[in-house]
Image (cartoon, rainbow, N blue to C red; front, side, top):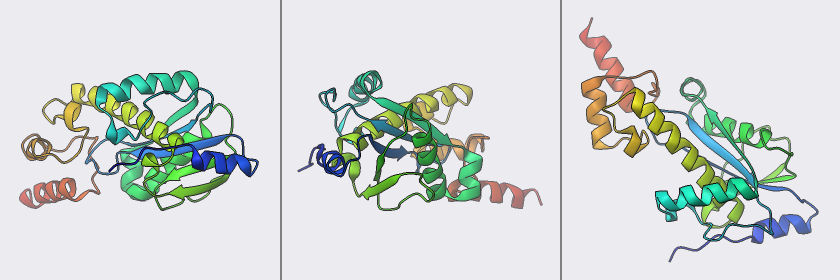
Length: 211
């Protein structure tokens, strides 16, 4: 049975005297194109939206509705690491870069960060802890997962209008059969991650065929 997130980690941090607790999560490590997106959210304990849950447990309609409530009641920030940064740094380090940028973009600096996952971003200017499967355990991380997912999905819909045929409005850049077929038939766009194997292989094949 899937557990639902709660406020226990946030309360524990508050007991230690840390007041502004930011949940941090990212989305977009697996796609073949587009940026990796992170969000940081400091919830108001008195105004936690009802139905707040791990973004993966919600429908797209539910995520969009709850994202609006989170933006209205919490301190939120979204940040990205670009395709060029992903290719230069690797996807893990680019994800951590986006997380650091999201924390820096909050209206007021957080006292403590709850980071989804098991790898701590280097160079954080505040105390932090990693929580494995944090989006299913911490309400603040769940909120960040929703904000990041809704923001990146919207960005991919915009990119899909500029580059039709890849299905990004439905697959968000993930390597679905439709996307992989379009990659072979239509080619690589500037938004594709050249360090990812399916994209790299097509580029390498194209170079081999022309020499």
